Length: 451
Image 1 (cartoon, rainbow, N blue to C red):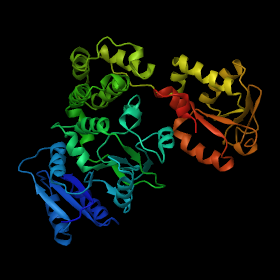
Image 2 (image 1 turned 45 degrees about the vertical axis):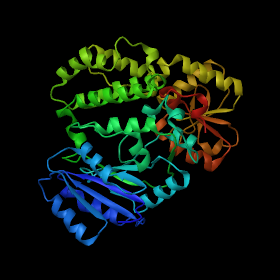
Image 3 (image 1 turned 30 degrees about the vertical axis):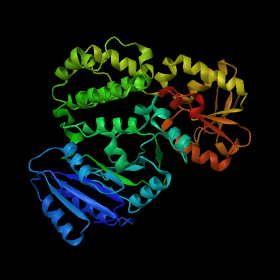
Image 4 (image 1 turned 180 degrees about the vertical axis):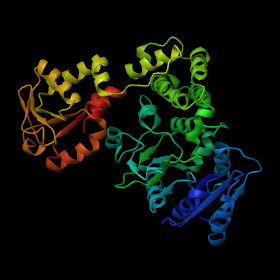
């Protein structure tokens, strides 16, 4: 096929249950100049028959039949080699897509000469039928980089805590990927960790496609989904991390991102262990050998993004399972230097301050700000049962009642920052929001959390 703008690469293994919906959502794309490369990885169900049926109706489908089962990573490599489009995407056979995804992502990438273009997705629970909004990037990052572009150098300090590195949440410039030399490794699982994170480090021009609605519907709780079986080979994650670290070292950029890498590593290692039937064996191997392979012996708190990740590292080093605590209360107590910077910033600017949310988090902030004699103007809570009451002598009210009297709102719940932003800016666009939770989690400047 000539003049292909985007190649759609889909590795397929026993996906008959959802494959038709996936292919239909691809073939119905408003961008017509596409090729759909279906790599059948020796499926034992009716997947191949479904592919042939669609190929008979649409010549844009190219079928590749693996001689033996190779896995998702090598199958994607085959698809990338066969792709002819200026750009390509890597889709999973059980997901489905907004009809304008390829058109909008292609036009945005082409116009702005992007190597990687990220877009929104939504999580669809196959068991419950519920959907959960998600995003490849945190709210603070998306707002800072909206309508601007970034390179690895811009994000390396916090890249592995902020960018969701899966193959399917971005469009790739084909020539860039080919020249990079980065390929998926042959692993039972976690192969996307290596590819997604190393290709990120190779990129000099990336961007975020801003849309009101999600572009991809990503299924979870699917029986044959690789992530459902990571516990069967829990050390693949370690192997992928070792390869990623080696790649970063060979590029000469590891030192700049080592804190982000260390924090990412301890968090990711827990995921397959939690699903393994041999937890104790896996924990012992990581403690005795894994951290040695990752050059992560005898690290201290300053080697991590925050103390929460360091606490996990200490427990894993002793072969104990301990999940990362990125809760506001823990970080507010432990990140004393950041809290001091936060208070200094507020005093320096002499803002009229409001705190949004009068739960445990908000009250912790109020207590400290009052003690430090910062200028608290209002306490905001949209719960009507709390409105009209007081805390520490301050009235709790709605944002509508104080929108003209405040300069900045402190947001303690990162999960609600998008909703709060939309509400506040509709009342008064001049009001600043400071996402204190994001500041405590990431290795970023205070100014990065204000919008």
